[in-house]
Length: 359
Figure 1 (tube, rainbow, N blue to C red):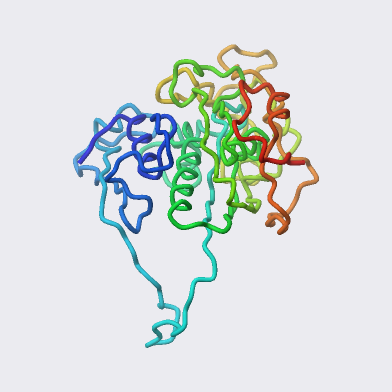
Figure 2: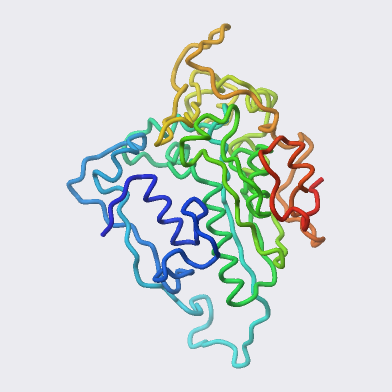
């Protein structure tokens, strides 16, 4: 059994998926010789929380390890083989079966701009112990590391590809969490092996806090083409609301969005009463600030200022509609070095010459 602090736990579990750049790995091989690449060979399993453990709330991230909420261990692999439960009794498979293709799929990466003034982390941050439903999904500590999770998955895909070539890959939707341009840009840049600045606005904590620090993504092996589908979070505010003018303005504002208190109400985004909160990137555990029930003031209270406004948080064009897969044309692979420099990033991707620009 292993107990770790929250940052250590997240990084080590990600390392089990594939070598994580923050740990200084230099290849696509597993960081630990005893570490396996797939769950068929090895699993990462949570250790059951002691029955007498103190009930802590989602915001008590610093106490997760103390009370056993972040303990994990390696477990045996799981290989269920072929499943015939939907087939007629006695069916055991085709006698002349053969492999037609080999591909990877990823889904619901939910790359999150945690410093956006238009996410809703406050609702989950203050939720009591064992809150279920939509409120419980509004916040998770993993939102601090969403680009790193994807980078780890890409490293694992590359390692598997080196053992047995993959013909293509599919992204099944929800690349972004809040339909923001910069979230989609991060997703593409991680896939392309770009220089990742996982913070936004005025980049608080980018020089001192691990989850805020820029890093070089490894990038998907360039011999693997990949295609993508749109998900509800790629098009809609938080995956549930059409981006109205209020929401579109809120995404690029320097003020935290104010909405209603009932996340399940269909018109909640247009209501008022609760500031949605924003992650303070200068804090080790990603404290959510500037949220809660406060009266709207025509003035700009300093306590409600979030990170600097940026147009890169803009939502998709208003004409976008429908969640469909891309056409079978060559996949759009991201921006060239020149367009990255035009965006003001600190340095271009190392392999941008193989990419073509997305429209």
